[in-house]
Image (cartoon, rainbow, N blue to C red):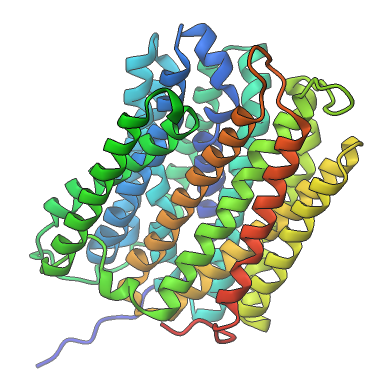
Length: 465
């Protein structure tokens, strides 16, 4: 006698809204460190290398937690894992807010890195409770609010730290995370587990991936100063190759790999990952270079803007990034992912190359940043929604985790590349980067983004995994 499972309870706008508020809160908490590294270096007596370490800890732990969270969510139920994960994030935010020194702050950032795994868990919940068309829009809303939250965090961190203290720039978004988690727990019905509980965890794969990502971040952090320690950089590159080789071999042999390389080999999945990596690389270069150019004090270029002024100039881009999520979901449902991604790629390339050519007025940078932010949201959301709704429901978490890991890696590479260009373009004994360094950065980012069109040409109108 077979037992028929009852269909999952359909969720309403309030539950999706709660997930969106949670995404907004976690996005804000994720992004408060990046714009305040100089302030934290002064207040905690940190060296520049320690500041670089602080800026990448969250990315490393997030990239590790994300596929694991997606796998657990697929297995045990998205809501169940999400609530527990957000408890860890809330603890991390509290530790960061109370941190008296760098070691304690690093512990808080390690715990906060779990927040990046919240997105695939949200997608699992949405996918199980809504039909495909509605779930695309809901996933777009959640993705867009996470991107918008990241921009809000970047805009508000400086003013909050200057007017209140560095403690409050962590405390305020942490309070929002706690409140929105309670709201999700109340409004969101539980989703049934999709896989048996007796499948083991791929601990060797997790450890090798941890070593691989840590080594990659160290390579990126040391690359701008490679001339002072070339042997160290070479040794790290060799170590990275060893980790990659070992990880691939372990994942191919594992009965239940943490990242399913067979899924990654599917054309729709690897294309989505490649596009996400390239697009986020270009976006993050702009996110790094535009504020630097607004703050620059060069002869005939730069605007000497304060932290508060920079936040105001970037605000239109934050609004565009927030709107891009639902627009990307709607566009994907109506026109297909290829059309949305092509539109976003062209829009971003135009914005990057336009800023490279013309940047003598503040509004040039504002308009360019709006185009870039809107394009990034459209592209990433289209990739996320199409991938999430194309695979088997039980694979939603791991499939979207691959996209998010690609986002993290693309963002890390883009930020470090932008920093390396400005470092190389700063004359010895000067603190002002040459204008040509900014132009080169925007041009490289635009060309890299345009290369995505070679991949989109091979895509079908909708993603079919």
